[in-house]
Length: 85
Image (cartoon, rainbow, N blue to C red; front, top):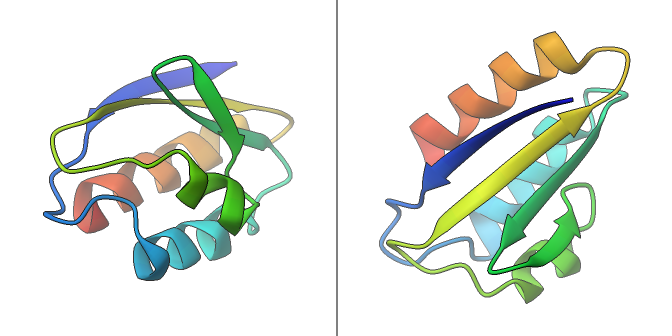
């Protein structure tokens, strides 16, 4: 398992558009990806679960990645967060 912490910089947080893009990115991999905020976790392949976390600008999230392709998934998903959120 690999994980990273990320502070959201997008001024409206994880809303519909970036959440949808994140779901598409995560679906490229077999690994299980979860996003955690304040002890609540959501599987990153589920749009409504992601939006249900209520992540706002300035919030810190923990992204966990585990599975066969976790190395490549980690690199791609971390880059996604840095360029989109």
